[in-house]
Image 1: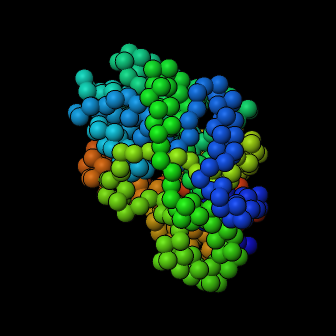
Image 2 (image 1 turned 90 degrees about the vertical axis):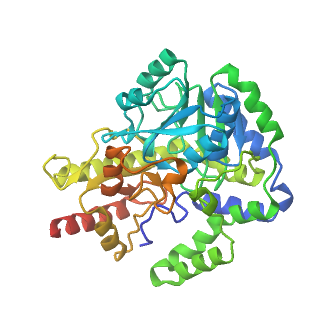
Length: 419
């Protein structure tokens, strides 16, 4: 059995590996080609709104914020318990991030807490559908309309399909998506902006048309990501795969998910083009996102049932399952709360189960990021801080099998019983 994980090429299936290998033989197509436009037009056809693509989800967000012509002193509300690239984009666009607390049962914005953070300087609210759990977009839309604010939907963790009955992606003035290596679908890199507010269309289109290309070497490194993990995974449990990945990182042949500068709160105020090579990897996954989402739904249902069987849905149990989770949701990962999350992750690691996903022990993630540089001060949002310390997330990605999920739950149950 391969290691159980969140981050070792979670969407690098056989088709993506084949696409990456094929692209390496056509390096003249790295920057420009048909795939970028095919991906953009396919997303636009689904959402029925103007769509533009960029080099990453964070740059898609940055383009959206730049289009709003934010001024120094303007504020954008974002939830605590988020990735540092989100407040970085706000700062790069010239505004200040204002953190609101979360609802523990959805891991999304607490609408009542937002109301306490609103000022005359507030210009927008970023609504994050954390791990694929739908945020209360109706309440947020009402709030934004009442205060003349932009609503931005962050769909980095979930992309709706034809069977999705929620309001995800239907309410925001802007909807942005990420095609990073561990997101809803993956091109290893890339992002998209879906524009529902016509006032923002022209400035975003202008930014997309003037975006600069990534370097040839950066693109080459990105598309080798699925090939690297396909080689490393079978040998990971005996240490050779781990050494291979470390060597690649040492040689700077792996593009980091979050750079050291980003961890210190820095992001340049420029946008770049989505490489044709990354669109070539993302396009098949966009087309089969129904299949990917159904796999996530199957594992979400399995985990919910397993938690029920172990009594973990009982409020008196040592494990707490957020009540906002529904079996019909294609969760990017399945969150539960335990009192000794860090110790459990450490113990599970000895069983070849790697559950550190970068969203643990921090309110502005990853834990190695400097939250203060991104405007967060400890004590601002107590629910988010408690959540970050007690959360344990279980994988649902396409490479995670039902057999592995069964093994994971069994090992977790044994450890919880011992504790």
